[in-house]
Structure formats: structure tokens, C-alpha cells
Image (cartoon, rainbow, N blue to C red; front, top):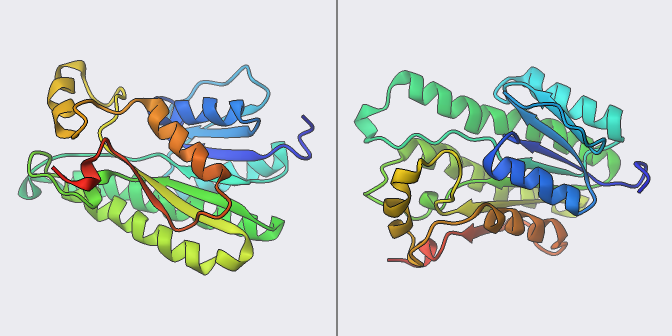
Length: 237
């Protein structure tokens, strides 16, 4: 496929877990991919450009968008996957916890989304997807996580706001709100407890989230959607 017409996805937090799954999923879809993470190894795949950098820093976002355009010509999709999740009782959060979570979850979203949408406007359209958490809409006393709700909840509200702002300019903006997913973030000894939090009685798999993002990628009439992929958590307990 000529790079002139090949779509390009920019994925943050791309070194492992859902992010690595998204890189693979978009490649199977035929997209070139710019994969960003603080620690990510170079790829042998000429259709994948890897970039090391802290997504909380504006310079990383600037470099990611610039190198995507230089290497592949455009940015068609941005997937805001990078995120930090710290579950603690509210009064036990430290200032360092707060700074770390807001830097990645909010600053990281703001910088790269602003730059990517500016590029999408210039080229005539695009798609933004953010990975949030089902806990935003369905708090659970067993998983105290105010910082996740504060930051990822902000992303869900921003998703709807951006979707409406750019609805007439061929830029769609959506989010996927996962339940608990089997990633390296969750040690095996916690899996039984975490599976019990989901009404279906199991944790999500990486492909559950990747498939949801790729559905949104191809759903041209869907924008402003918060797609819950959470084993029924959003329906109740």
C-alpha cells in the first residue's frame, strides 16, 4: 500500500498492554503506526515508527506529530492510551501521586490531542479515541480511585465537547471505558479479586479493548460516544 494513501494512527502508551495491542491491531487494519512510550524499542516493521518520550511533556507531543507527518505524511487517528492508575483511599494520595496522574492523564491528553486535531483540521479530517475507565461512571467502594475519576472523567467530558466542536469538520472524537483488563499492570495474584468485580465474572482481555477501538475507527456515524467495554459493570451489580 502506498504511504501516500495509507492511514496513520498515533498511539500513546504503546510499549505494552493495550497500547501494544493497538499497534498490532492498527497494523492489521493496514494503518501505519507511530508508537509513543517512555520506554519502547525500535521496530523492525517499516510501517511502525517508535518514539521514546514522556507524553506529559509538550515536546514529546510536538515530536510525535511532526515525525508522523515527516515519515508518513499525515495523522488520521490519535489513540490516547497512555495513563496512570493509582487506587488509594482519597486521604492517602500524596502530592506526588496527584502530580504523576494529572501529568500523564490530563497534560498528556491536552498536548497531543491539541496538536493532532490541528493537523487533522489542516488535512480535512481525522479521529481521536481516548481510553478511560468504567469507574468514572460506576464508582466501586472496593476500588477507591478518585484520581482516576478526576482525570479520566475529565477526558470523557472533553470527548463529548470535542465531538460537538468538530462535528461539522469531519473529526470524530470517542472514548472506550474498559472494566478491569488483563495487562502487566495487574499481578496474577490479584486476578481472582479483579475478575469478581466484573458482573460476567472474568477480567477483560486486551483484544476486547482493541476490538472496541477498531470498531469506533470504522464507525463513521459514531462520535461523542463513551463505549463501555466492562463485562457489565456499567449496567450495575
